[in-house]
Length: 106
Image (cartoon, rainbow, N blue to C red):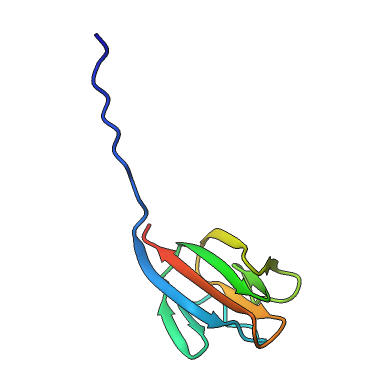
């Protein structure tokens, strides 16, 4: 007779939700535990895991410095999951580019 196997489902827990916001054409500040996006400040903490989605336009993301067009490029509808040590920076190519995301508990 085979032994009983219990599978315990594990889900990530949400720490913060970043509602869909326009990503500025000026880079957000990186290397900070607070993220400011479109006049809203999110407490992201240090060494966090996040899922970011580009909902419209093009957005560049940089987890180690200020974002430029040499950073990770995201197109509309794409997702990026990252573990970031201290901060993340965003910049877009237009005033209509938007992002949304989740900061996960670690």
